[in-house]
Length: 293
Image (cartoon, rainbow, N blue to C red; front, side, top):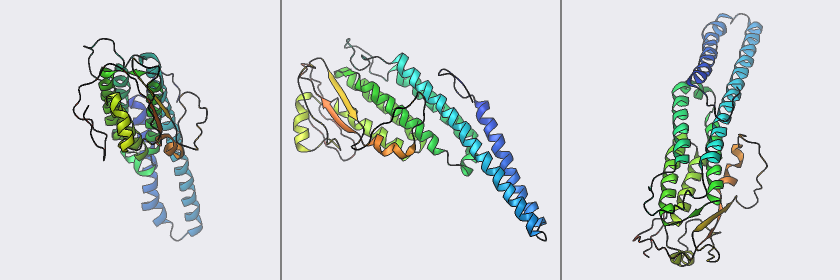
């Protein structure tokens, strides 16, 4: 399967994969009900038929995974293109105080496509999923989308209004990625939510929260009030001992590396911004506390 960054797998593609898998399942059923029972008196021939059937089904399953991997690569390329063309360094630092506090157009576009593709995927390939574990494919997509979002966030600055736009982006991503049913992806999305919550905390409260140990899992969090009076900048790196390999555009991330991706060590550069959000309570995710400015 080939295509550019702007092309997405059509429903007909998934229907074709379903048809091939259904034919393979029919062959397996025929062998079980007819060949195996009808060749009881010829064990040698029955063994040959059985091995031939296993080899054929193995090749069909391998083909299924391969072409679906190609489809997932198209999704990743689409997400990469959207993040490149639509996102802006000012997404979370709007100048107008009346800016709409809703998810950005980038996250809306990527989330809508992922939602639609996953829905078609599940609808067409329920039977295939019984033969081949397809969750690993969506895990690769989810982790790559998470990584793209983090890369974008590292380049942006966040002001008071932008913190709530960011929260809506994270909510939307968490909603979509949570449908994939992959533990690694779900954990990554939950971690993003914890990080996004930090941005709605008044800068003067961050140090006290750090001292109290109430920043959930953020052992690497540090504060620095220098040089960023107009907003906060987000920094993130993968967990200790994990060195990200160079990867070409659209390449799937092996699921074996998901722990290194989701164990993020976070550093937050806090501003001494004059803008002080009038929040009475800040939630820090599971098990977290709250603070009043």
